[in-house]
Amino acid sequence: MNDSTQIITCGNCGAKNRVSFEANKQAVCGKCKLPLTVSAAPVVITDGNFADEVGKSKLPVLVDFWAAWCGPCRVVAPIIEVLAKEMAGKAKIGKLDVDKNPATSSLFRVQSIPTLIIFKDGKEVDRIVGAGSKEMMTQRLQRFI
Ligand SMILES: [Zn+2]
Image 1 (tube, rainbow, N blue to C red):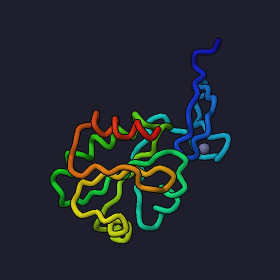
Image 2: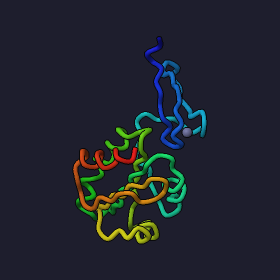
Image 3: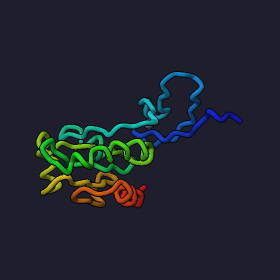
Image 4: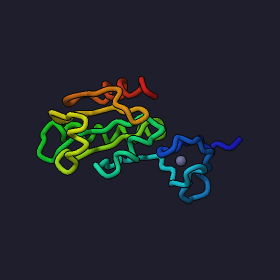
């Protein structure tokens, strides 16, 4: 028995990796070769990487559509940070600045912010408009995991 061995699901491709944390080095996914991170941060989604980060993601993706001037977005931001850590390996959490990425925002008809859209296989499956609790967001996201 080896207690320091843990199964980590890759946040990028969804492959399951057996990782030993004894060796004090960065573990890499056996499938896609990207670093495996236990404490994931939200991914910055842009008009440029949306197709790759969201469209090709094997995991469900929750994207927080936000802007710097939006008050309620500042309430949602720390929740998104925590969600990214809690959902690491189960779902991908992203943030998209609507001012800098108008194409994606208008493609999904984001009328007011914050808007949280959950994507599965690149398609919108759920949408939360306005700020909400972490519990509510987790519950909505769990249905697609
Ligand atoms: Zn991987």
